[in-house]
Image 1: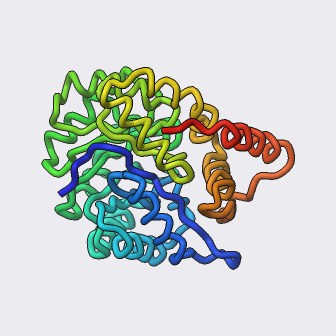
Image 2: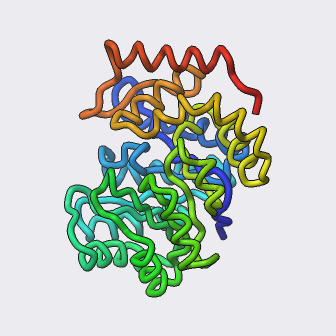
Length: 296
């Protein structure tokens, strides 16, 4: 049973200096996040560099986190083909995942009929509760609120939506169409307070990987209507949260982890670690934030 409320880290995938998944640190990081109050852990998404992992690595990542924490693990499911996505969903289920975050296919994106057939096959592949991930800027597939409701009518185990279009009006529209039938999670870090005001009940977060206490506190202040406390923390946090909204968000968030001594900046190719002016600008932002860290 998953209560789709609270802050869920889209957890990064750590790598050793030789490029393998660092399972020892992955377990430590997962425990640290849950101990800080996170409601569960979501591996294998965009931030988890899922597109660079093999199916065997993905299953092993899920197994490691399931063993490490007593909290829901919700595996991100994305692949080039529908068959591979279905296989991955079943592997994640076998590895102990309690739910699935279902993404559109990598690379290929077209009309509603094909995209709905793809995600429907994944949702039907297991009995696990599913969250549909809508991120049109990244995946070029846009599941509109009416389309999402139609999918929910077809699939009883589609119970949540991660909304990352960047348009907070989508949350209002989903609430109007679906009521409480679907739990709505915001998937854009620098929109979290506005999204909660519009009706989001969960946050699939990125900077939480480095700042879990602040992330959990920000979401909770917003949910409880503690506007002054939320506003103060949000002002401090926004320069960091904006790191989640740019093409090199993986490199930036892993750099943030390195600055708080909870991870390294290592990424898997074709990504490369930041250098030059990009690195200098990011480090200046991180140093300024850490020098004036707001108490959650």
